[in-house]
Image (tube, rainbow over all chains, first blue to last red; front, top):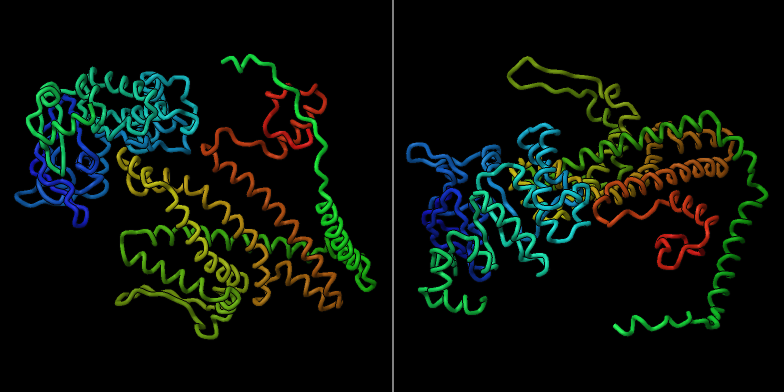
Length: 250
Length: 318
């Protein structure tokens, strides 16, 4: 589903990604862990072209991200094409980023109506089902600031799912939550994984990664230090750097 | 836990501190204010019956309508062009952002009076205005004075100047919206213009509305500068009458009463507009004065509620 080959990315002189190779298969849940500034969030944002990569190849579903390849030449994609591709990838942010001037329901139906040109009725129907699925059937008319952090994040997940994405990206979805509220968001994500959604999850929740993740990637300094099944990486880390990181977070 | 079971002690009753200073200050200020008002009201040469006579005079009422037209049109030009300029200013295209910068620099840096004067006298330098496409036979031309009559000159002068100020207000509003909002919208596949129209602008409105209300109120009064273009708005009308009757101050008072009335109505309108765009920013909007008044009437007759049920926003004294 996602294929990265030697992906590089710099912000000015700072090289954030220094050659990332990985592959995410359909229905796989990949969790990415690592210290702050290791490049995991940046990599996630490259997948839906919120950041542009400088070198290497990155493709989703066999199509390059942000470019079209013709012969041996690359052509940059226009705004419309980039948007169409993004609409097939859901993303959930650390700070929720719900639209504060819209109710929960309006947040969820906005993109299906405006981007996919779906009818108001069918979009509303599906939005209600999605909000019910994340346990917020009662809150459809609430504004984001009337909701707790956990509830907001669940609306944000419903909002992303409303576009019927083939891939979901989670950027530290529980890092801004009170400890008490982390569980409800992880439960929703667990349900998604069980339904066969392909997911890339940047997280600090080692427990979630162990339990739900199919693969676990440990990043540091812009490179993948170690990757494998969660059982292997957590139970039997091969690198000194992985061992010292895990000893601090476990 | 045990503390919660202890009986609540009686509320404190104490003799309040005497605020002698406050009383003295209040009396002095009121006395001065009353003195000033009395001086004017009782001025022997100030003919209040003249004020009353001209207050609803046909020419004055026409002037009020023209002032309102001028204000609405100039603000419309200002807001639309201001939004365009603000978006240009934030555009990644350097030409766009520079053109916008220069426009703002020029129109903010010269007096409105001069600008109105300029448009009004445009015919002196450009007797004809036209445009054509080089190397083709397509061209069009018109007499400047018919194309830019006095009213148009004043509207352009006021509107183009306002656009420069509105551009800065709108830009401040757009910048105030958190970048995460744009990213979240982009991640959903929304195009640049959709993100602007549906996500960023509506949120920027909360920041844009209060100064825009200010600008509108200010415009209502600045429109009196159309006097120099002999546009028959409120102030021009009042002075035309005054020049015939020599009741200058009386007619200035007539104009002032109308300006005050109009700005008061705008102030109320601004309050409700701010409320509308503030939705989602507060947990439950505060009551409007009208709602509070109704509530006061209701609670006036009803037995007083228990302290913890007391609505937070009840007017003081109840």
